Length: 485
Image (cartoon, rainbow, N blue to C red):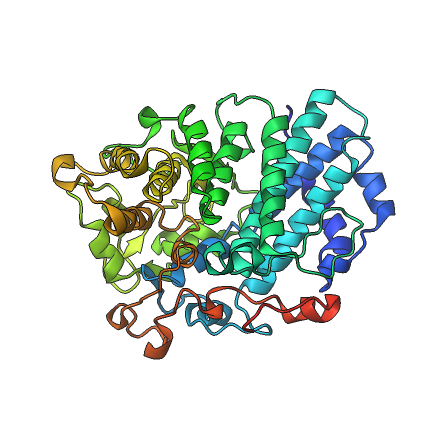
């Protein structure tokens, strides 16, 4: 299918969201149908433009381009803030200290707005794709990608603004589900209903989407294997271990051991052999120093305001020859605690011109291991197979570091491996929350950061682990605030 460069759709997105996304009551806003009909719904080609715009919205610094990944890092035990170079970013310090409120919730307001902005885009596509004039195969592909993207966005909203499945199961508060462009939403669904919708969107997308091509750069768009990978992640959060394993195995039937990066080839450039879905960032949609890479990299004019704690540095030193330890470099405090996974591909002027991985093959091995360790088919013996497959690619002395644990020790080992492998990829604190593990941050790791010792340790069940719904949204729609806030 012909793809339209990001630059060509920016004006379209801006016009649409001037009407649809900038108001505080984004969920109850009715779009301007004159604009949408004239610019968007007439043809498959125009809806393709809008789909490209949706990928661009997802890459925003208010969502995957910075906010979610940075939040996941600084609220856990492995990363901390240092004094900023350009501005104090007090709103992010609020998150770091677990001091959010409905009126002051760090990046929460921007992320909420950006995600529903993207959902609004995707709803316009899905409302109009069946009647649009154009090629039928392209129509089906657009619909498939839009469904899958909507499911992914709702999942990221759910794990950020709703309590985890482990706390109250499906009876917990879920999200307001806006499923058409004209729908007025004032009620929150249950978490069960939210997950049902997420899974339904992803499964429908996987059924409609064309077969994988695995051509160069193909994973910057949704693919069938990418959707299966996301479904494995969703079921893991839902603690549906059998389905998590099933979808992980679908991915591993297509991408396997030979595609894992090894100790001599662990480089985070674009479209690695492990890529299942990643967000494309180039000079047209990069946000420079506001982007992800600049947050962790102090070189070439980057801000480097988030660095590894000693706890994480020590974790990376566990295995002999671990290539992940080589990602540590000089930080702004003069130590070697900058963890540089995202490297600007165009020199210092761009700062954050690099792709953002959404899901990689390494995560699929870890999902399969965790599912089996919790009782999915194959049990602990198969969990060790999946886990050791990855460990063998992350050490020069596998015989020494091979996993042999069982029971709770095995589940802890998998969690520890996720911390090493998936650092700065949007997991971090979410892994603690979804598994019900308290977040323990050593005082010695957070000296001179402005965080009071009383704000370091947080119970996994605390309301402070998730964002409150922005107060302006509560006031505009009348929906219930999250319990605890």
